[in-house]
Structures are given as structure tokens and as C-alpha cells.
Image (cartoon, rainbow, N blue to C red; front, side, top):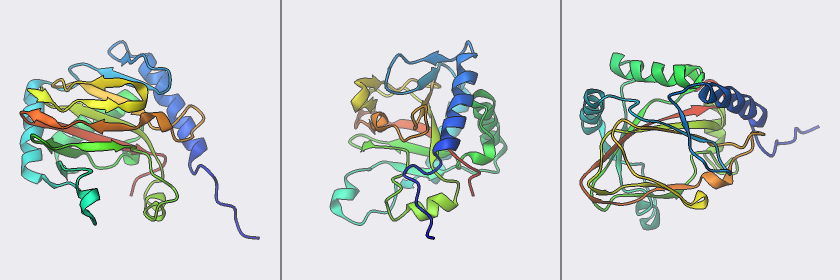
Length: 223
């Protein structure tokens, strides 16, 4: 008999991870729970010091290239930033990852390589989800590489003169970049289903340059 494709792959694992991270963050006095009902979102002010942010900005400038490879004009306008993976074997990057692991309780082997992103005036990343569409062509590869994304950890590395906010459209929430601040959110609901309410966008930078680093965690070991 042919196996039946689950409607929500990794649902049980995502529910377990969500519970672990939720309890760990709730017990940490340095963590602030952002008061939205439809998603689990947390923030940590001054997660990185000024010199650490400067170090990561220099690394991003070294590796950044146009984000993704686009196949149409429409897609090319969707994400116009520069990005690049940071060296996973670099001791400084590993230190930052260990902090994220200690904070969330997620095994670092379940996390993707830290990605740095740079936005100059006019650049943006339009509304999108971090969780994967399991009906898309890419899902077979992502399923074999660690499965669905669970939590997103994003650190702002600098203040931006104007623009560049992160907007969660369906949550009516806009977060301005603040140097060193960490933003965390669960891409799943408490029961492990993908959360449709965490649609978000990087609004266009108007003046200055925006730098961030992001680490996505999976439902299983990432390979």
C-alpha cells in the first residue's frame, strides 16, 4: 500500500521544539515576550555588543552578493538585498551560535549556517514566510536536509537612519532596527502546524544601510 503524505510534515517535532523553546525563554529574565496573540515572538535587547556588531558587519561586507538567483523580473523585484553565509568554522561565528543555542535550548546541529544580509537604499524583501511550502518543488531537498524550519533568530547589527523596519503584516506589528537587538519567533503554531500569521517583510531602506544576521533552526538535524 502506498504511504500517505502527511498534511503537515514534522508537525510533532515542531510542537516539541516549540514547547522547549517557549519554556526556556519564559524563564529567562533577559527575554521580552512581544505581546501579540497570534504568534510566539520574543526579543532580547543588546544581545550583541557594539564591537561584535561591527565585526559581523565587516564579515557581511566580505561575503555579500545579490540575494538568491531569480528566474523572472517579478521575482527579481521581490528580494533585492545582498546576503551571504558566514564561515561556519570561524570561532567568532561559533561563539554567537553558542549563545543562540544556550538561549533557545535548540541543538546547534539543527541550525542552518548563519546568514548575513545587507540592505542599501531602496532594497527590500517583500512579504514572505520562513517556513517551507511542502507542495513546492524545493521541499524534497529541504525535507532531506533537516525538514521544516522551526524558529527564526534575527539580530539587527546597526540602527538605520530611515526605513528598513521588519513588518509582520498580519500581526499589525512593525519593528525598527536597533543595533544588537535579537528578535526570535516561532514559525509554527503550538501544535506544530505552520503559522500563517508570521508573514513578514523587510521594508525598503530609505536612508543609510541595514545589516542583520539570521539563523534558522530546523525540525531535525540540518545537513
